[in-house]
Length: 414
Image (cartoon, rainbow, N blue to C red; front, side):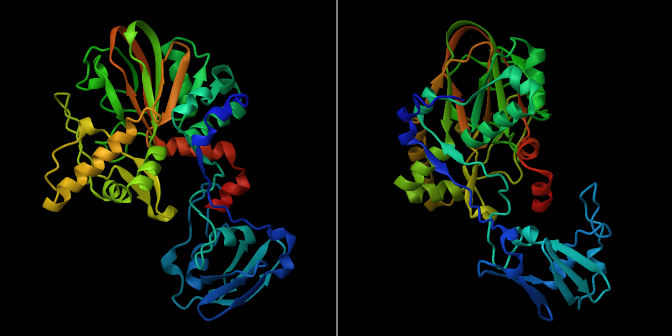
């Protein structure tokens, strides 16, 4: 993606979320690491004057030797409940790569320094759930000057360009793929190159026009406001793919909005509204097809969802006002608070400075993060044939990690 000549036009509106990384070069001073024990803990004093304290039961339970951990399947073999309640270390032998511990149950464990540092819990040093050093670039309408783009032929034929596609989706929340044949077969093959296609009540790989084949406004010519899909699923699809392979008409421009960027704006302008949309749950449903009634379990999630294991950071947006069910679970004092927060959110979504409008065309596929980027469409007339699919979040994340991490990094993260 070479856009340096025009990048200045929008970078002033872009913010980057930097993942917390606190790695140390263990090999620089192994002899400075000391290990001591108490009756209940193993204590590691690091060369940067930090100290980690590990409970004996925790360390013994996490032994990675071939007796305790299957080296191929990466699954635990140790019966946790066979560990003596009074387990303790009877000796420790630090070395250049890590420390060997002999336990009073006659077992020996070896822990690498990097693994111990990464998984330290008393105290925590790093974000153990974010093993990829990929920044989140937040954007607004200025992204139109330099959207992330990769080439179909390169993605299909090289691991490097596939990795670039996956990284762009992680960083920007979307990516275009150019040079895609105007056909179902090749487009579906591209989707499967990313990860498994998710089957839903709409099918697997879609091929549709505005024929109301399903009871959803996506199957009409009506305009669609910025939204995320599958708010009625307990587990919304992670990615979406669109490829407009036929169009003979007017209108139908596509819309993307960076939900993380808008959420940051809302948090700055109105912390109270942000908190409201982070706590009040929204029931949703899909009931347009005669034999379908889908509702999430539990019946409702907030619009803004945060991960307590990631410093309570925002990880998912679930918003489709058209799929919202009856809000009869609100307390009386919450009603005006909710609608005020929702109005503030909507005003930011519709701010022209936050809207990225573009016209899809045959040969250009867009894949976007349905947990972050809201999408929409202008009304249109004429014939419009769209193909595409949903892709699972966990499968995409797996492919992303495998394409960017070494085997050693993967093992250290487990």
